[in-house]
Length: 87
Image 1 (spheres, rainbow, N blue to C red):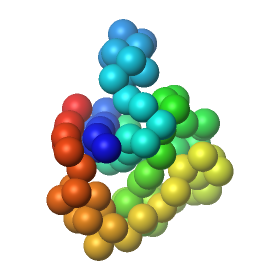
Image 2 (cartoon, rainbow, N blue to C red; image 1 turned 180 degrees about the vertical axis):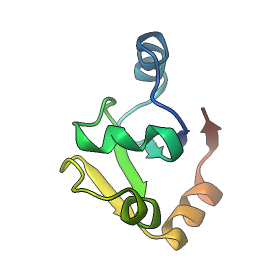
Image 3 (cartoon, rainbow, N blue to C red; image 1 turned 90 degrees about the vertical axis):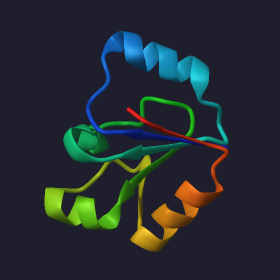
């Protein structure tokens, strides 16, 4: 399992690269300037997450594709993923 943390909205080219890179058992996590992506369907065929603390600060109702997680789950994912990529 891979964890891709997006810190900004990816370009079309970057998104195409991520579509080839990530599989259904991988995880996409949004943070920072990538948070506006929570208002639309997930762009990749993997688990789509956002940290609850960031969602609460950002506000609004995320698209149903996105799942809010607590910080303990975020740390667990970071520790157990074979690869962690921050983009």
